[in-house]
Length: 113
Image 1 (cartoon, rainbow, N blue to C red):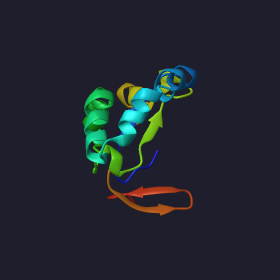
Image 2: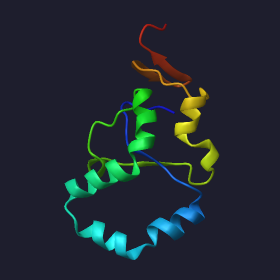
Image 3: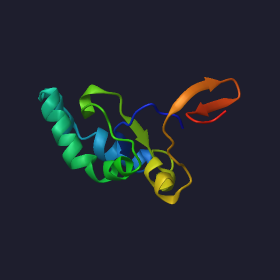
Image 4: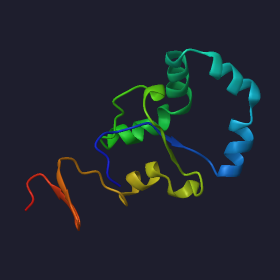
């Protein structure tokens, strides 16, 4: 996983459960669709993403923009037990900063030869 900056990562339950309970809720979708982007961002950031985002922020993956101003990343849709949040917490994925350059066979970080 390579990222130059953090982002909003939405930790979701299994796809069938998510789509049947969240996406198909027409009332909520219609309501959110009619709100200004900054209200949508506030609602989603505070009610849906706050808990999971704390894990990402702890690992240095803080988003640089509001939720509705950048692409979101979905994690755990096919396998909720192996989401980005859980893999960061368990140490299976580590965050490293300071990418110097990309090469054909890998990535060179600052201070490496």
